[in-house]
Length: 218
Image (cartoon, rainbow, N blue to C red):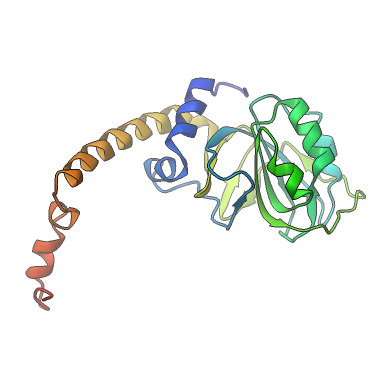
């Protein structure tokens, strides 16, 4: 586990899931693109280990494997996302040996059937057989921008079927506290809704609508 981010904090964020963490973190950190989880139903979190590849090239992926540590989320991206396979079965084998918690590919993967059987999670933009070159070194352990959010090495990524969101490493402890508060609040609301109360009334929407110039809807 990287730096001062504790395993227990990462576990809490993973258990909370993307939507709860994103909302509790002030609706910040969402990697707002369409992701495909190759193993639906998993919720995973971990510090980011990043490779910024050359365009259409995955040489940096081979280099970043030498830096990958157990429990980390391997983040693979390039200047402009395109459906070029940066990651496949052989690289997946290396990532497993290094103890990756998950792999996030802001490009394509291939060997999808093999990747679906992995013990760790893979999230990708595309699935394509089109291969990458290995001519440009790229950069490792650098900040990258994905889906409107900058992700730095060591920031914690949370990944599940809803997508991916990031928490800056320095904010993890406060984010965990905010997540706990949100979960407690939602549990209280869930009990109220289960007892028959309507959010339309509890949030004052009915009163506002009935007192609006347009009047109540019948």
